[in-house]
Length: 435
Image (cartoon, rainbow, N blue to C red):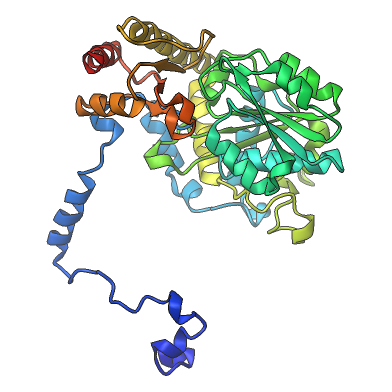
């Protein structure tokens, strides 16, 4: 290898790296071992993980555990879908293009929006690209307003992409809701977009029509962020309350939580904004013989056009994830989506009432919620969750991780996979932990 590279030794090969940055010590790599010994060693390491399958899990906060029928992975795992990463040659990728077209159509119906792209990298990067898109459309306006009740990690990604902190405003939250008075004072002719999360980070379902009206009166766009699209099975879609752009996370649509990925970014918008949308958009047409055909109608990624004209360079197309989501949504159907959402809402409502009955537990936000809610105790949330984990219960998320003033509050999620017995067991274990 050194000979082919034209270097006499490793020092010559790595001379471009300053010596102060090089690791001169040997790497701590163990000696080789037989395959069966390696397998045993790796299995012992893997067994140290606390997985959702061997615990009662009430984790949420952006990654939601749902049942995925075996047929979903079986169909998505067919070689026709697994092999094509993305349709770089549309004329020979008709099956992949059709699957993406169906995905787009389903997402538009669920979100109540006019157009969807062929998928994004993640919900957070979709939110960041929505901010950039709003700034392009607004022509001169640069500021985006992010509510404090939006997922902190989504906010961090948007802030990182915007880069200039003066171009980001944080809308305070009051009792878990967007502070309308604060929002009114922050909206100006410098604002390109007002963001909302639906349901918000605390699981609260807000009526956001007045927020959309306030944004539009200031000639700003309203961007809705939906990390849990299953909620749209029973909630009014973003398009119905005035969202100009609606993005989300498609992990719940047939994909495994799997340590947080791969994820599926959802990106939708009103028809008149389509030319500024990032990513690919598949369309349906007919050929010279009148037969249906599928094409890449719009391709505005930097891989397709000059970098300076691209609408995004972070919207990697999750074609296989989008196909999986399309299969999952097709299997559920309209009624199935509504029923699943209803079950999730009912499970969370039961969990909220059951935990609220435990001595020392308070529900700080009195508002409708979907499949997540917050409870508070007199003890630090970290201690409570450690005690629950000792009983085999992943009890939720310590909100103090992101919000120091909420270090005694826990974000709890319940889905169709949490049984009544699990919820009752959680309440009993919590009562014991608080004694």
